[in-house]
Image (cartoon, rainbow over all chains, first blue to last red; front, top):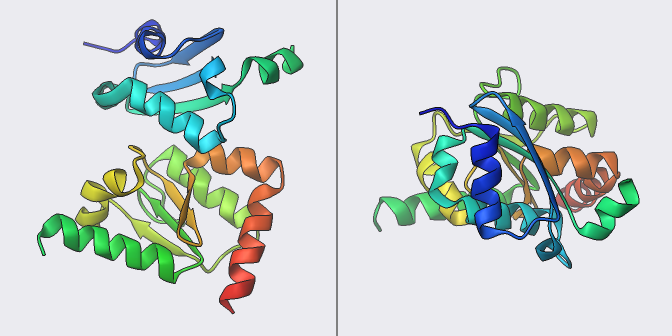
Length: 79
Length: 112
């Protein structure tokens, strides 16, 4: 059963409140932009660890995930 | 010691005794995964050529136990002065901000 970008978005949002999320991918490699208030006060490594913890063992279905993680404030600055 | 303790001790030794370590799939010359290749490229862009690269496809201890050691499930993993920096995304982002170069300079300076 192939994992779709929508699956990945749902997996992440089930465990992390997201102000914005966009996932693209071919079923094996995925690129995600994730904006969450839970990233506040965390360094990039901690932000990525949080996403991996939320994904848990579903990571096995996601061969490779490239992430850009931002707080709502960082995201607003980029708009 | 059991297999896990041996592997964890080996990882701890490698990352603490070397200023910069990259655990990757394949080697810097022949990366076996896009992300690992990108990580090696970023280190090369920092002007770093002599660092310890561990091919996790040939190191079962690292393959099985590095994710638990680091509480980080994927490869590659870059360590500077024994600390996990992150995967290729974080390395690339830190490189763009000039942070990675700074960390490497400090780590390799004290190592001489």
